[in-house]
Length: 478
Image (cartoon, rainbow, N blue to C red; front, side):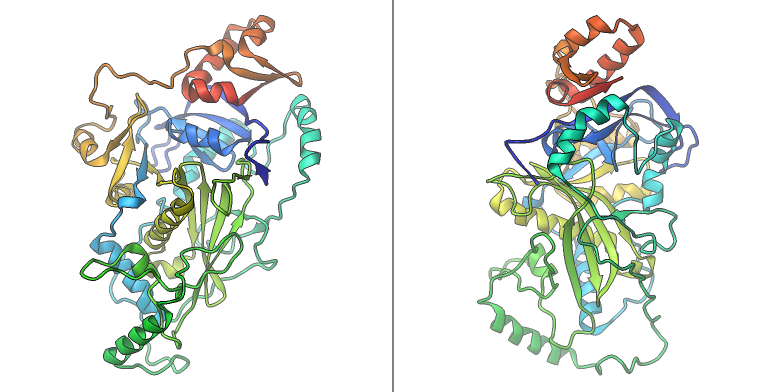
């Protein structure tokens, strides 16, 4: 894991022009439009700045929707965890999980799940369509000889190796494969179907007890544990049982998110839910900082284990100012637990925990909010939250944005008509280029390459990533 002061620069390969391809949300075969680049490596600061300009990654492919032309405009959304209070529906999800863990109780009736994306397949279908159209392999991109040779010595010094295992069995109903990073158990884990409710008593479970007895026991356990430090989240590769003691709520105040998540369970609880976190392979370079979180910055898998069986994997990026949710993969047999909502609440609580040491890390990014897609509008229920203005890249409270979105799919949220993109590219000649094993400013490079098409592509890239990123990241040209 690299230290903050000794970082290799981000190296990206930009795909010039724009292209229409299949939308993963409305299924329009040619309606989605975006710009994209391949991240051979990327620092967490660069990615933080990119997502604050409307970019988002899918694996190593980093893309930015063409907001005023795409069929389903995708607005970057962030929640403010420090002011977050769970809604009534959020509390129902947390209580449902506690009842299931404590007594094995499965809520009756249909419970609509809300994953962080419609499904993993829907979320990346459009991206993969574009990647395939560009004839790029998603798991491995073959670098040109120039780039490979220029990076060989650095890679040897790092000596990194990443164990990858097939997690295809995790999502039994989806034809998508996610590679888990080192720390994943060396065996493939099949998730077995839970017994269906209404089929008689389960003799393997403890007998039912009166609610009054359970409340007394919970109160006794809380009194026994009140002097023990509450454990919000374990560090890397550390197991985290749900029954860790929560911080005590003050009298006459509603329970906090942590109180609800970490409520104590009886000793003879029917189920045990644990969590592990591992660094995973991604274009983001793992980094540490003296004032950063103990687990460091980078990409992580958060694994959800129920009674020793894996039921979900959340992919998150820990960045200088936020925790960014990438995907959630879960076993559909456990959709009755609303794992999408539950994992989002856990990640909000985790962001609050990281903020205790790293004060600048104070936001939870939920990806894209798509007002025109009903099953993606639920992200607006995590309040308070903000949407990113697609023209000036300032954050605007979602309440101020919704009236405009009711009238038009594409909106400029910044009401100041004279405001401009303060981070726009102003000096493109200062852009950094990696060409023939050498790093040079674009002003030097363009004297050697006088192709007008190449110049148009570079200037388009500079406008999209902004001045700061264009000066730090290396744009690979062959």
